Length: 628
Image 1 (cartoon, rainbow, N blue to C red):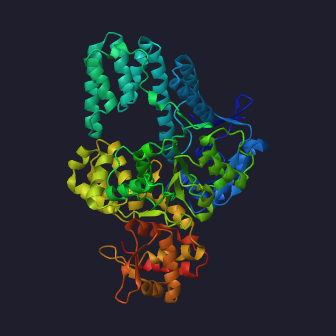
Image 2 (tube, helix red, strand yellow):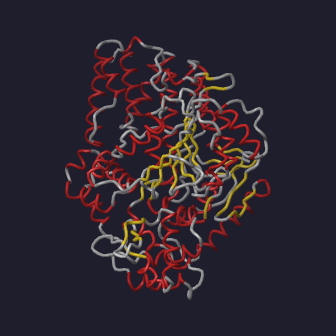
């Protein structure tokens, strides 16, 4: 059996297309395939099927779609119910996306080794797996969430294939193709560099110069930025006559990207995600993280552990990755990275994470086939012992998950991000992130949207900053939306954000979504805490956010004050509530971030376990007191 998502979603059996119809059925299949046997939550399936307006019969319809898929796919494919969602195992079936990724990786590796013939063949084979626009017959919600990522992977693979062709001197054969690609991707500077190179080597220097100036104008008009270093370097080489003297150059893959050998067993791992080019603010926090990760030079033998905490969307991952890139020189044996949370927000099992880290650390011959966690931990600690490694563990959920992933020697440094303090990281330097100040918020908005777009609408920019309440994720979403709509002024988006009833709906762009980012924190709550969450959100609301004491919460919930304080502390531990000073009697006060408050008020009342319990009162209070 063969599955296809690089174009219309299809299933083929024995070379023939399996007939089934309906955008929603194709969407459920594609979502399960993209999860690669991980759980896809009901909530995510709901969002991919119906967006923000699900029907009242969500559960029944999901069950129907899953049942239909099981019948269509037969016994070769297993779709299991695994709360909070479903997971699919495809057995020996193939997926065109997996084949594409495998071939593209092989092509990149061949390119690094300067085996240009093999690189070109592998990359062409990878691109041949594409059959049109991804998810063309699925819902728009799935296409918006997943197609940009796949389209980016295709564009990068195209750049690599063209780099191989240029290195083989095929500039005349690919000039026409490159001209079309520049029209298709006018903002991709590398493709423009490649066409300039091909034109120059074909004796068309004037056309290459015109292409550069056209690209510079496009970047200024669309994004408000100047050409990047690679495009400028290509232009300088064009002017000084050296561009056509480099037939073996490979602009798409740096020569220094070749793996270096460190130690007898393995290459140097380099697993860090790309750095955030427009990283903004967080100066004191960044300095603290970098100082804590740097060797103390005194050989104290004290483990270097850093924990970055804060609510969802505050930029913990961005800060950790940026700091890790800045500190790379201190870790000659490499950098490991693992996201400890799956795409649907559920925690990953430590054994699965360990297997991935061990693959990066060396040969996999002695890695146990089964998920024997004790054996995996032993092997992991053996391979990290004595090595100057930086290990970044992102989105840690708790001690049980994190403990097996910590090395037991002081040489490797560990940088952990999580929403609350984690007792497993004993003695760690803890950096607690707060919302950005207005000045830093405006700078981040300008970096994401383009300085010219923000400078042209200062009042709208100030309003957007206020509505985003210092949350970097929200600011980046709005900036991305502004940048993607060059002919739409920021004022319109500012007006749409002004309405609290629809603000969360607007804070969505592709796979970036404030509501979705907060869901894992809410799901991790105990049921009794989850039930009272919407009612508590009605407290402390006025002209601006106002801290409130446990006594006020006790009155609203009709509970003893000690019980109300216990519930509030649980929300604070989950980073859904902030402890903000004390009242006149010295009792702690609590404060909702404005967007967390809107998230709480947006939760469906139907999630309450019983209409007479605290959650039922929560819904009642919400109806009576919520006046945005």
